[in-house]
Amino acid sequence: MAIPRIAVIGAGISGLSTANLLAQSAYKPQVTLIAENFSPNTTSDVAGASMWLAVEGSLATSGSRHKQWARTTYKYLYNLLASPLAGKLCISLVPYYEVFGDHDERSRGDPWWKNDVLGFRHVGEEEMRLLHYPVGKKCWSYSMLMMPCGPFLTWQMEQFKANGGVVVQRRLESLEEIDGTYDIIVNCTGLGSRQLVNDPEVYPIRGQAIVVKAPWVKHAFDYETKDNVLTYVYPRANDVILGGTADVGNWSTQVDPLVSKAIMERCCMYSPGLSTAEVVKEVVGLRPGRSTVRLEVDKVTLKKSTIVHNYGHGGQGVVFFRGCTLETVSLVEDCLDKKEFPSNAANCEACTNTSQVTKTCTFLIY
Ligand SMILES: Cc1cc2nc3c(=O)[nH]c(=O)nc-3n(C[C@H](O)[C@H](O)[C@H](O)COP(=O)(O)OP(=O)(O)OC[C@H]3O[C@@H](n4cnc5c(N)ncnc54)[C@H](O)[C@@H]3O)c2cc1C
Image (tube, rainbow, N blue to C red; front, side, top):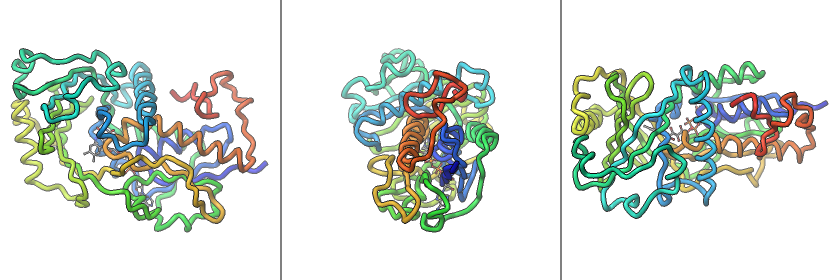
């Protein structure tokens, strides 16, 4: 019986989680993960870890699919938070204050995800004063899921290898290089898609942040001014990440010391104790900006292989990853059906728990 051969390109959160789920597919494929960089050297490793959800207008997504992607990820992470894996994956739930001014679209009304987060409420002036937050601004508060990507990527890689996945460190200049070696190629190269699949719509949104030790900080804060100056303090399980920047079109991956100084000063304005925090490292990452996430089967396929894309998640790649992974796997399985590969879904040992979204049994894998 022919075994489907699948290559997933990219080992950030999109690629690794897609490769890992495919390795567990009922089609029993041979999955190869190909990437130039692996954790801790991907953009995903730099992500702040917050499950912050944008309001409608500022989403780099297609139609209303982003809601489903985010909701699926939330459910998945709540399950992990309540599982024995929470410690290994450093997932936590922290109080979060999101401050914004009248200019901000957030001031137009409550967000669509109001009921998807726990304990959403409006914060009054008295509480703002107590916390020394900018007076006269608006503020929401709720419990925020935090998940640094490093431990998650390590866990996914362990699972992927245990499920028979093959790992190849390689930079591809074009997908033609591997045309025909695989039945399906899944492109999860983030910003790399600009060159790899010649997509001029993909652009960098540079982010710089500082990781500090500040174990007394237990609540998160986020404030963006009218002129897009961003300040955030995100406590994670073992450190606190201070930010930030979002420079559209900036390709520099070098830490700018002046930017770090400005970030520290802004964060200390709202949380002065941070001035004594030990700096662990300064980080830079290029978010894969795009007007819409590209999650689809490529209509112009290669000569032999079929391409499925999952890239361009901007500043929300962590928030969307689980929903996007399930949808990508579902598209790949449809392609395998069309190529007449047999599925063992009916024989799945895990019984009746076959996912409604994919043919893969999600019962055993959280
Ligand atoms: C400072 C900062 C803070 C952020 N905070 C958050 C946050 O709090 N919440 C959130 O949801 N998102 C956040 N993001 C955004 C998030 O990091 C991205 O959306 C997400 O990491 C994208 O993941 P990805 O797997 O698609 O891409 P990446 O993590 O960039 O992975 C791309 C992979 O493709 C490989 N690749 C690329 N080109 C090639 C090629 N030609 N050949 C072979 N391999 C190739 C790379 O080596 C890498 O393995 C933040 C980003 C930054 C920079």
